[in-house]
Image 1 (cartoon, rainbow, N blue to C red):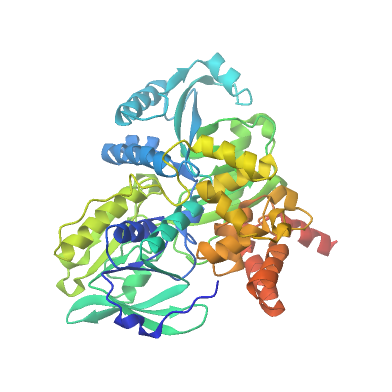
Image 2: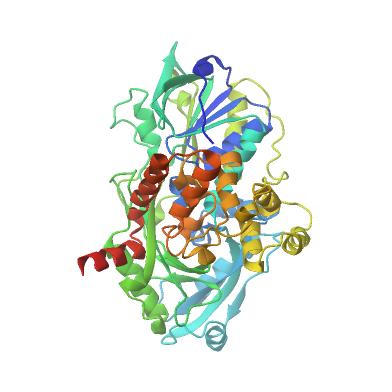
Length: 558
């Protein structure tokens, strides 16, 4: 719904200001609020509107990090994977992976098997099955579409997948608010407030209204991802001084099922450069990626280059010859920038994926009160949050209370028998099996609350009336739920980061107008706003290079 920022927010006694509402920022705000801190979470865009949305959507231990001897990171990741399976079973699920091994591969059978043994050892106590090494014949029986030429075997192991990483961040932010945090998306931090030689808050602009505000707290955590250095420039630091982020760009393509497509995820070594990449069953289709190039371009508009798209197509066609993918098969792409530590030279794959919690006071006394986060993985966000909140308490001169985020489920999570709950919901919801399953995947135990949004208006309990809603499955009730209960402020928020239909085959272009109509009818939008929100959404998804736009352009040209 509409939101207003109180003019006297500058007087509120916050303990902590968090800049950046990606998975790490939302996780920090949740942990802080659950432990009793008065927290303010700010982001210049929407929750999960940056790097969180551009990952390969895996909750994994980082098998390839073993090559760089990052054993503590792998152990941490595997431990956190287990916790996320527990607190968010609707969003995080096990997924089998096959690692094919070919003659001449950079990573041969012995190295792969050694890595698998280490992975199993570091994941001691995991609920997932241990690895199996497969013979050539077993591999081709398991994944018959794989290129058989030079095949010597494969490894089969299990990791986790979160199809909707955006919702993982959204639920953390919702939980933070439920525990007392103040959450403001579309609140751009313009500068850090420095008083008496220390950072004591921020000045920010409400992007939607243009209003200018200030907020104060003894500790500010800069967890803006690729924008960390931009935030620091708001402290009057020279742009070239102590650069912290050296982002690398990762791009993905999304395609429909193709001949030879695997039931498992494939973890493959690229022919062109030896870099590992994934072919992953995802959201009813296949997600293929990612690339890894240093990036110094516009952080607010990152899009896949055609060279990257063809790289991923070519590599897929090589490992699965009958796939025969072409550029026309790409439904859409997405790209983002990893907020890695600045390292101007050397291989990008060698840059650590472990996070760094940097207390600026340790090197600059005048920056007391400021902490910046560099790096951080989707998988380890909860532990990063725990460590950061512990540091905040130390800076406040107080012993940290116990962190409870490993035990308390996210809003849609359920620590009892989630499968029994899901079966009951399917039976009682009155929805078709496919629609009920979709709501459970998105909202978990809050799926009945979504349907409650319909009230007595039964028309909202069926998909929106537009040509392709049967494919997207979007319910009108979800639009209302996003605005009223999940901090959505724009149509793009609803489609891209709440209902997730913007990650469907037509990137939401088939339901955007229908969703806007729900807001007109039930949220009081006027026609001008509805039209503007649809235009803004379509302008945004152009960066995905969706097939829908390519086809529309071809028809117009014809």
